[in-house]
Amino acid sequence: MEPDRILVVDDDARIRQMLVRYFDDSGYRVTAVANGAGMRAELSKHEYVAIFLDLVLPGGENGFDLLKELRGKSDVPVLMLTGQDDVTDKVIGLEFGADDYVAKPFHLRELLARLRTVLRRRAVATLPAGKSSPADEAFRFEGYCLDVPRRRLSSPEGDDVPLTTGEFDMLLVFVRHSGRVLSRETLMELTRNRNLEAFDRVIDAQIVRLRKKIEPDPKAPALIQSVRGVGYVFTGRVL
Image (cartoon, rainbow, N blue to C red; front, side, top):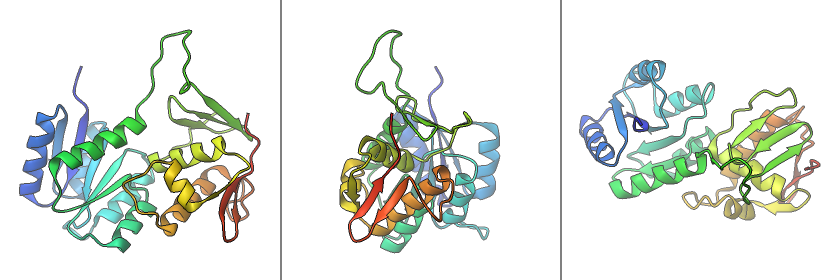
């Protein structure tokens, strides 16, 4: 079986070489490029299980630009890399759909652990026919089907609705706690996202994106409703 492919997008040749060497030794197949053009070329040729994306890049494009471009057509896990441990940059990256955000200098073992955590959350569960487990769940609401083992959301028309890792985990928490008002702190705890501080803005941004994907009118949400001064409540009837 061919190793999982990882794409590194970073203009620092030293970092590219370091990541290629380390993650190759860890059992992955790594390709490293220096800019957005290289990223697009690689994505047109291969499928990648994750992308390490630097924030500061040459050529007039930064990591935020490329992340927005990626999220317009793909839910591939993205781990942002940056030399600035800035809260604002972190929040913006998470709002745009990054799965994690790592400040340089980083420890390679920590980076590997973060990658494995993201991939584990995205992994497709495979169970023998006829067997069942607590993870073998599918939730239905308002015509949608949330397939937990396969981490897929299907629309009432049967089409796949692409969700980032954070969006899927957030929706899963909502459907499992339908009718219960959840604070932002509770949402952070239940999604088990220990890599993120409990920024209200991050939670709000994920919910805005979810509303755009499942609400008939995101500006007048009926499924994920705000409870002023408390948090959010999922009002859909879950089967």
